Length: 271
Image 1 (cartoon, rainbow, N blue to C red):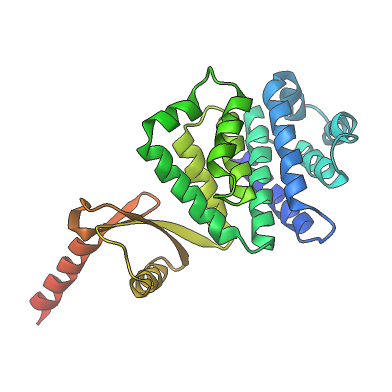
Image 2 (cartoon, one colour; image 1 turned 90 degrees about the vertical axis):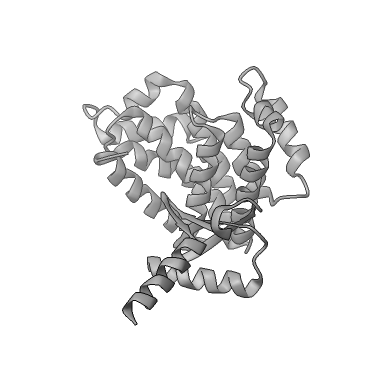
């Protein structure tokens, strides 16, 4: 997103945070209802064009939202979507993307409230690794000929009792309504949103052997100092990793063994 859409989404996220801070608002219900609105606008191209038409009065668009969904969702959801309709958007798709993102944030907020956000982060990462290593599973989950109900049932068999309900809901929405994204891109986006809930960056750490708890703490502390933000470590083991350790933060890749050698060489040259 850019320009007006980015500003509109930022304002909507602030309104969402204010709503979910209230004990009277069920964040999980809010997530489900926002996901339903996302599906509606995804189907109805004409409606999303009307709701993002800058020539239409903002209040008229907000009233249209209330007439369409006011009796079908909670007041909190209807008010939030009406506020989105009042905002300016660079293109119609941005509105739908924003509502989908808010749905995911609401679910992650529900996990944060019940103390399972860290586990959800880890489960999203592990699910991504499982999919990456199982071509048959990935094919089944991305098969355009398979019905959403069949994919939902498959995911339920895979995740029920093995992952938190929030994780299952997030992954199921992504798989059944990818909206043009690859499964990998969708999972990465969810992981980033989860990390943001605690103002942390995500570091994907691949090591030749499992790291000890002490090594994890030292690595997390070092990365936090380097990047100036708290760091969530997604851990993976690959005996063939070059240099013994590979750390990726966003697009930046750090090879631990190479970095250590360069630092040691620099110290010797300075002495």
